[in-house]
Amino acid sequence: MKLTHLTDKTLLNDTKFLVGKEREFLTKILHHLKEIDKRKLYSDLGYSSLFDYCVRDLGYSEGNAQRRIQACRLLASIPDLDLKIENGELSLSNISLAATFFRQNDIENLSDKKIILDQLENLSKKEGEKMLFAIFGEEVKEKGSHRRISSEKIKLSLVLSETTFEKCEKLKSLLGKSMSYPELINYMVVIAINEIERKKFKILRIPKVSPPPVAVNRVISSATKREVYLRDKKRVKCGSLYNLNFDHQLPFALGGSSDAKNIRLLCFNCNQRARILAKL
Image 1 (tube, rainbow, N blue to C red):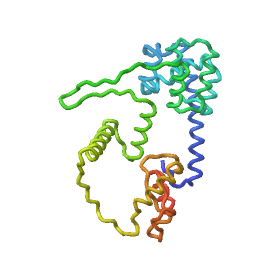
Image 2: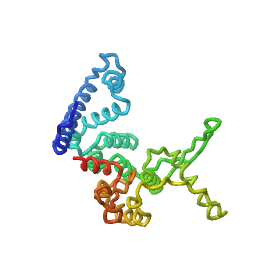
Image 3: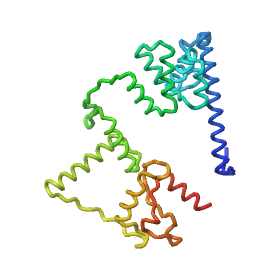
Image 4: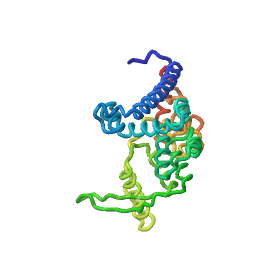
């Protein structure tokens, strides 16, 4: 399907309309699964459970099947749940999380379930998970551990505070790379070792020789980068800190300067979008 003929506005409006239809169809699917479960129709087809039917006959992944089954079974006791799904107020991920917490904490009262689901409205999965842990006041007791899994590898299990985890995520964003946590830990360890050796033992690493700049006036000075970063880091257009770029608002080729007033901080995607718009 080619969509290049669509204007930006039409493309966005069409996508929003289709997402609405997708949620509408999702609620219909949940109602059908609820009725199939009620009649146990999957047994006529030789499947041992609704889950088995969803995975083997309907082709859902195990995760998608589980989320839909938990939602359709909650739908049986909370009729207006489908409206919240159709309106985009409740996601399947958060409904599935809630169902798991209900089961683990023996929550049977319908009013209690509705109150908790109301609090999950318009939350991301991460926010919903945090909220549920806060409600039930539980913590999964886990200790950090490590064990050898090969002649050259150690499996490390860590328990981090939310603040530390968010700092790690911010570091990954600032690095602008699709980096795994083992790669991130290696990066941090190397930086830490270099910094400690520099301060404690006065060991200096041989700096890498950077290629010469294309044109002197195009180079953005360190002072300008620092000024722009401090000015723009909290008001980047999309709010993302992933792979930030320094961008000339008026292109250098068209006479744009490299001082702070003409330089802005953009994430990678916004920078690419700006280039696309410049070509129109």
